[in-house]
Image (cartoon, rainbow over all chains, first blue to last red; front, side, top):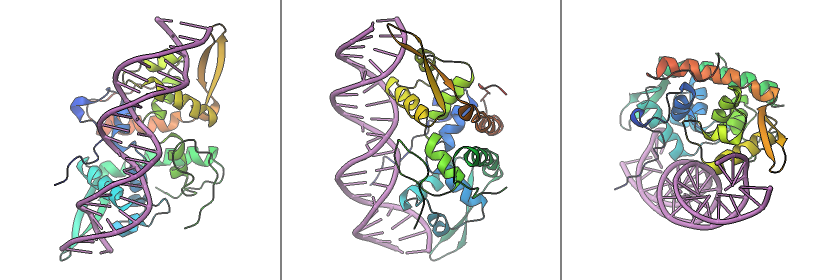
Amino acid sequence: MTFNMQVTNPKSSERRSPCAVACTLDVVGDKWSLLVVRDLLQGKSTFKELLASPEGIPTNILADRLKRLEAEGIVASAPYQERPVRHAYSLTPKGAALGEVLLAYVSWGKKHIPGTIALVRS
Amino acid sequence: MTFNMQVTNPKSSERRSPCAVACTLDVVGDKWSLLVVRDLLQGKSTFKELLASPEGIPTNILADRLKRLEAEGIVASAPYQERPVRHAYSLTPKGAALGEVLLAYVSWGKKHIPGTIALVRS
DNA sequence: CCGGATCCGGTCTGATACTG
DNA sequence: CAGTATCAGACCGGATCCGG
């Protein structure tokens, strides 16, 4: 009987402010969410593929982020086989729109952090 | 897994990957940093002004973020009075360039989170 | 009063073991 | 392979304290 799942995002009703920046950060402003979005944009779709990224996301964090992003309507999951059930994860249009944010990150990072490269493309 | 290190990361992890997204997230990927940048872009400059934002950043967190962002070359501080000494914080060109990232957030947030507005200049 | 620094309890993170 | 359970410890954030 577990509880106390990792829910840090305020619900809309308890939003900190109407600021679009603050609210977007409440959705994808943590350390891992945008990296998951980046990988999905690159065509990865299975749990294993997402785990394999060089940043090394832990399995429980990945599972939690996928769950959270799906609840936010950013990620969609569809079973592609049964017994054992397996899901293919993908971005909804809402999630794919975050590609613009990623591009802004890439642009800033490439310019201001030496040695970085774009691992995402639109 | 192998990696190279090119980011001085005051906070949690060391490096993660050469990905510009991941490295930028290591710098400003926490819950508060971009909100501080937003406020500075809007012309706020004193500790008190930054504290007054509707999101309610705690004093210790604000002090820590300012210190960290200054170490990253994103924020500059200059004393504007002595006895007691007071600092005016501002963005470096590197920090101001994050405005592009903020605009991407605003654009996404306004479109996908109902009720949000742009609290940052366009 | 202002700009922080410090303390401290609770929450979240993340490595690993474990299950189906 | 795709997650879930566990748990120690890092981190957040509220409250408080302090020098100027």
